[in-house]
Amino acid sequence: MQFLYFQYFQLFSLLIAIVCRKGLNSFSLGILIPILLLDNVTETVGVNYTRIFHSLDNYFVYNVYYVLSTPLYLYLYASMLKGDRREQRRLFFTGVAIETFILVNYFFIQGRAEFNTFTALLVGVANIVLSCLVLTRLAIRKDDGSNLVLDPIFWINAMILLFSLVSIIVLGMLKYISLNHIQFGRKSLYFALMEAANAALYTGYSGAFLLCQTQRSK
Amino acid sequence: MPDAKEQITTTILAVILVLLFFGVLFIVMLWYYNYRRRQTAREKKAMQDQFDQQLMQTRLEIQEQTFRYLSEEIHDHVGQLLSLAKIQLSSFREEEPIDFPLLKDAGANVARALQDLRSLAKGLHAGHIRHFSIREAVDEEVQRIRKAGGLTVSVTSEGAEKKIKDDKQLILFRIIQECLQNCLKHASATSINIGFTWYAEQLRVRVRDDGQGFDADRVLQLHTGGLGLENIRNRARLTGGSSVIYSRPGEGTTVTVQIPYE
Image (tube, rainbow over all chains, first blue to last red; front, side):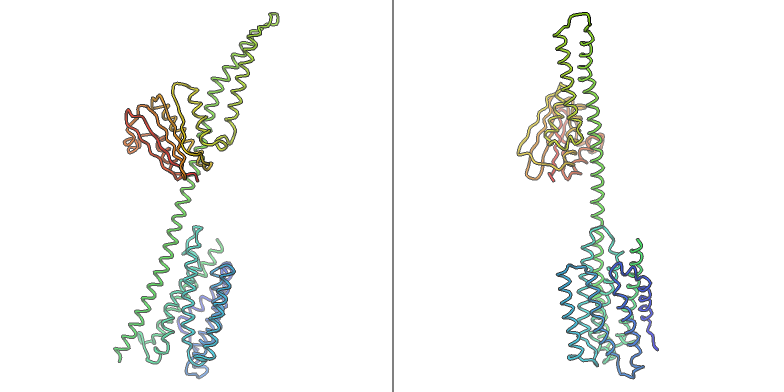
């Protein structure tokens, strides 16, 4: 069984999340534990899929991941945005529209066998917009004189934003990169960038979870 | 072909770097915005603390002033009247016929002392200044100065009187008291005018005397004017208002204070 280096970061952040679950719950971030569990399972299966199932690619795994993880992420944003009922209703309908598109794309447009690029782009854009929204709101709402840098939600969204800015390009061009064997430092450009981006994302998450715990105990 | 691939790799990396740059810039800008807000909140709190401290000090000063005035009043007026009444009454002998005019006079003295005590008690009321308007409080202060004699004090008012916040009223009253004390102590003035001008948003109070004056610019620049002038400026600033102290040797002194109502 193969295990890529960024998966250690991923697993580490899951372990930290479990250890700091009380802290996460106090910030309404408990949903991140199932998200990280799903991430870990997806990556472990995805990395070894071709070898175990003798398949040419592992796109199926990631397509299913998008279908399953998007509602969880939307729930996470809803709890981080802490909007009023009207705003939550808006976010709910936006989420339903996004999920519907993902399912339609999965079943009818790009299909199960091909990597769902449109879904990756849509999810990337949604992540960028929503994380920017959370960050902006956080900065405006912080009128109690508390430090933004000490807020775990700030770090989680900052890392999601930066990760999405990288992934939207790389995943959007995934087919082109793999067909043309575009490499960076003797490694596929996709792996080179996504592994680094994932490592940064999960390191950020781990830091944020530790902040949850320390802020809670304060 | 390798060159083309390298170009594509470079382009993709460049686009990602640009996007990351804007992402990081956005995050830094938010952090900076938060930092500025925190700094402003800290400054605001410091200002509020300073205001509260100044308010407390003002209250203590007014209290001290009132006690001093009370002590003087009791000693100089009530005490004198009661002593006189005591002497008058002690002159009566059981075996002698009653001197009714003297008795009446003693009774009048006791009544005057009682009247003085009543007005003093009124001044002792806890929320004395709060329940008065600033005009009434100043009028009462002017009455005290007039009673002491030797100085003409006039109060003028332009525009319709408006309600000032209690805390600000207290501080303004203390500023006026400070100005009057300065006139009495240092100015060798013969007349003082206190002018109120009620504007739409703020009140302007001008205390002018015809005393010997001083070089205000120099004194304020060198900070040699003691705490009095500094207090006037600080207090006016803390209420969100401003003050101008104008004086020239031989030209008297004018202190102008502008204070917003809210």
